[in-house]
Image (cartoon, rainbow, N blue to C red; front, side):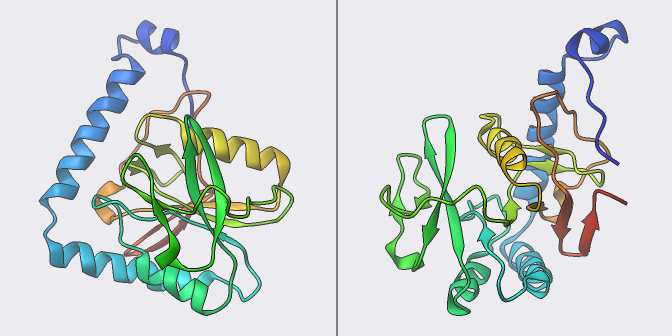
Length: 208
């Protein structure tokens, strides 16, 4: 079941906080949870997540992923293993507000963006929208119905929505620590849900 989306006007009628306030409060609450995790807890949960994802990847699959920030599950070992198995791997490059997926052949050849995030060089091969993919999507919070709360710039929402139109065979999966799962993520019309979420405890499909 897809997460339900409400207009700001409807929420105001119910006397509920503005949805932007709900999102801000949830981002702050989830960040606080993540920061309470120690190094060992983050490493253990990250390893469990990586193992669950890798079991799902078939030999011929094209993977779009992300280079993890400190507050995100550390999937660097998974990225390296994907390349070792000669599978196609694409990572995001942010061009202003636009997210573009470009191919990676070696993690050592990533460049550092203006945001301090390792990414493929600007001349790296761009993902063909016609190619079916499995996309691993970061976020600040997720719910079991596929709701996703990002960091607020909307880059992934726009990319997912655009790529879904171009290719209906692709799948988009959230990747999260267990503490990032919440009962309900506030969603607006422009917010793109995911098809499921990987956590240390397993995979939850949003279609169930």
